[in-house]
Length: 395
Length: 141
Image (cartoon, rainbow over all chains, first blue to last red; front, top):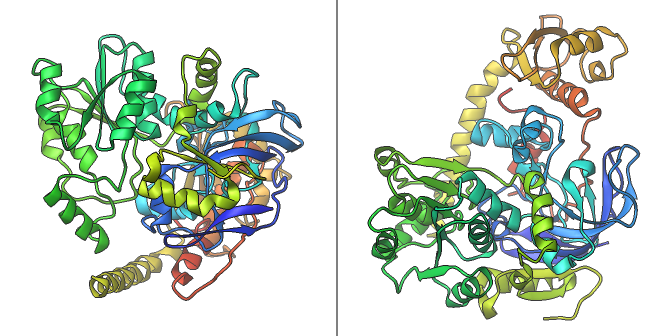
């Protein structure tokens, strides 16, 4: 089958790889109908998460059709259209039974890498390096889905692929941000980052009844998209005076919940940016956390900061003093998709949650390298590049 | 910048090699038991692992000594594997076996890897290959 492979730092190629097969009785094999780039892939692409082997297939956010079913699979049959959680979880360990699916004890086949890095191993993830289990990714014609009864969800008839696709990861991650932050009626929420996850976090806050939601970014086209499709306020990270604006919005308190949706390659102020980039290039730190710094700094006393962006290991300049002295709660997780996807599909079926605008560039899988190039450079208004295996009109 | 990056990388690799050597020495000691917590009730596990044909036991050496205790709260059962001076395999093999045992007890089977599709093995990818090879058997367990 054809697949988009990581072949080296900042180098992708479409090649031919073996078809997947049922390897475990709880597997299904899915024919991928749509699969999409994610900002966290860029950390792999750029070598910031150095656990990719040349030839590994990228991609973790996808929708497809079941074509083969393992003997112990009960909830799915051949022909089902399914959206699949990017995180792989067994559904039976202590963490899964508490709906902390991305912490699954049995999803990651390579626990030593992350145990050494982080002290213990989270679950596995499709196409997200050997540190996260070494599973083949979804930027391919077919993908094996382990623990399919737990991680794959039938897509309601009225929800098309273009919309359902984002339930797989970005919408679930965004919803988790609002959930972890305890967002509800009366909350004031600030979100850093207007990519797909940031937009979905803002949409979740709106749907959960937040009083006021504002998204901060420096790309005008994305801020426009937020105003149009999410219907909340925006601030430009460079042109607006973000701190005073947030204080004015909240009569001096600051937002109750600050959600960071940028990750380890964030850009800050000019000096901060240079210092962070030099340290990262010298491997004195792995992550550039400028959006986390802002979220902590601007959050109201006693508020909650939620980190949704992906970070690899170590960072300098973490404002522990502000966190401690302001009595903030810091929450974070990789995405517990299995907890949120069913509810998100219902919202999508009722047209309360729209996502298809996020897929700004739809193209054939064969155009994958070009799609990632557009996505990485945020060129041509690219928010997400969507790949259709087997061919789609070139964007 | 490239020279600095290379120097930093070399220093990192040397540091990692020192760390692995230093910590690797204690790895084969038989004293400290290896332990996992299995999310199954204690009584159920005692019964299941008491059967000589239990599937989960196939992941372990014949001479492995298992000790089961109820875990605090809702965590299930603590399973400790004690290696003796007569144990055949290495501590790393025992660790991998114990992890597989937990997986079988919780999910019914072990999760096999996807087929490798490596296109270009290179000298610089060697440390990663070593890390991946040890990724199931190493770690902090």
